[in-house]
Image (cartoon, rainbow, N blue to C red; front, side):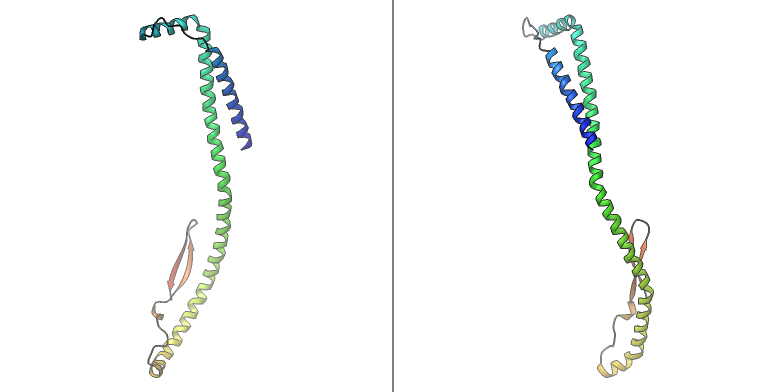
Length: 168
């Protein structure tokens, strides 16, 4: 990043130097006979004929400035891309750490899922056994909602974690 910044400063310094050189070459003023368009065009043509060497040098400087400005823009794009990547890197590391943590929890959920399903089935068996007697004594159900019990299970396709409910 510092290397690119240094290159950008060097290019900008070169552009500034070329602009100063160009300004010093083109300080001559053109003498106009009058302000008519024809007179202006003729005066500039005459000036160009008389100063062919100077015009070629100015054109070369203009071309060099244009090339250096293109190079400077490319370096600026590179610099921005590097800055974005540097800001992105800690986020990527944080995502990776979170992904590892999620994997640990998902594995634990999947490990507990069969055991939890067994416990729910055992609870249902108790409810089936006691419901009639409990109803006779208390006039209300012993356990409700047991018909649609599910336990979580985590699936991972490489990009997305999905928690599904497996009906017990």
